[in-house]
Image 1 (tube, rainbow, N blue to C red):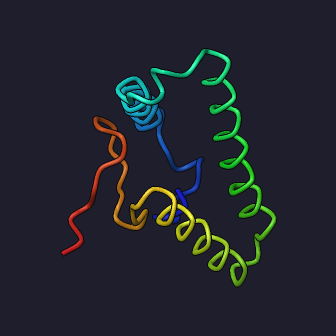
Image 2: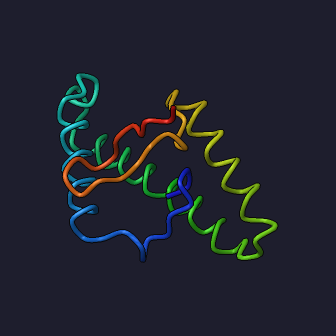
Image 3: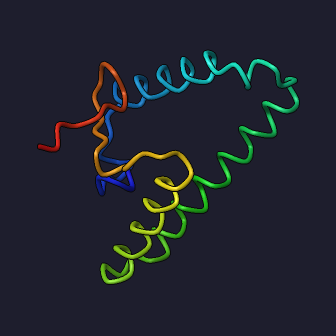
Length: 104
């Protein structure tokens, strides 16, 4: 949403389902997550939800178009720094969830 400027009301249920499945597969395959207790996994999930919610609320509070751009840029910068991916290169599909778009 942040990288492509999408809003939640523009994302269809099939796309949401694909992202949920994709996230489940990624988390299930992560060897570090397999070592965590159920309580630790729940704590991690709570943290991820809080971060996403804080970013989303920052966008909603910054409804002024002049403010949204810098907020979105900061979210994208943090994602790049944390995960090593440029969110502007991601697209959403109903069959695969997030995919790298051909940016050439």
